[in-house]
Length: 248
Length: 248
Image 1 (tube, one colour):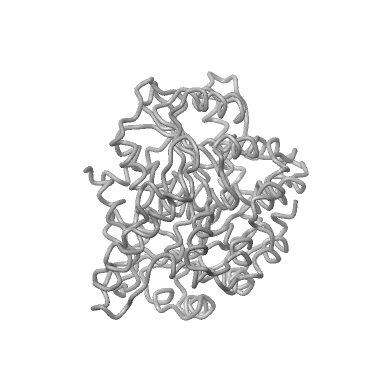
Image 2 (cartoon, each protein chain N blue to C red):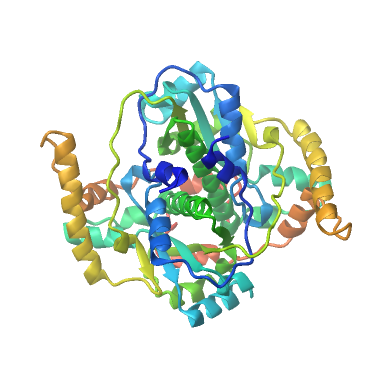
């Protein structure tokens, strides 16, 4: 296994960091790695906000639901789907693009673009011995996050990325069995899916038992259905549309 | 620069491949790398379809707009946002999750999850000396792609990924200047944005001139506004909602 594959396969989210901040050079390395990712038709439809100010981080931590590691890390990035830059281009070229950037298609393009970039930044960080954790919790209070960062229309803060020097070890969580996720030619049928999920439930149950000294007894299907029983972040559609995207 | 950073920074899309297929081991390596990516609350909301059948690839190439490299490559993957598996889990646990998986929030979660996985697969491929190209063109005829792959409700084919042994060299495209994409504390203002885009236009114009022996004279802002002047794939919203997602 080459060095890169080994980094990819050894990923685990890090939620405890030392207080050493990332250097300017490290921040630049991560941003440039992010920018090197593929981008749909060269559109580069994302922006990254870096936060160092402790008061801003404190507020972001509160808005995300009180996660310590939003405040205590080496650097905090927010990845945004961004078509605002293209409205500036449209002004420069005197061309109207408003019917296009308000489509669901372009919202998907920008969300995918931002995520390919974020994953590149994550891998770059891990290659430098840093740890990372994605923070979807920012969407709990997305309107307030957007105001705090002064995001204009056509910019959606998708998630944060806490990066820093790991303090302590975390375990790699076993993923779904390959045949549950990877199929050839056509989508696999549900009969097999249940058999696979049942086997996977045992793997996950063993993983939790081992990590908690037998205290946590949970399966993947119960964990998922507990989480999905109650809808969350029902404001997302209105927020995104309010920013002028995903309207048609 | 370590080996991984060098792979990330050397990315360019490859659109010409030799006829050597990926080995089963290479396919598995890519899928397992994909699965190692971060996933929102462990939801693992994506599936990957691998296509080897030449007739299926021919049809996908036609549906994507006639791109040769959808047919001629070492392996063709389709990355899908997928919450169907969770409906199977819900059946097993006898819990209703329909109000949750139909939200915009969960569509975003699944799209991000799939994209982090896809980018991991891409980097794994490049670490093995393979080349990759994302194929957004599958969304041109997303309904037909979905039928061809027999995708059930709550599964959205987001894009393809053509992978293979590169035939010929392509150049790295210069990205937006770092300050256009990366900002600290708050979103930067538009006055600076125009200055930056004007400078970037020169970079891109030089890049195209050099590559085409002076034949192509194009700037980034003109390329973008030409593309964005006419809306495309206006069927996306209806398709996604028809699959039971992004409804609320």
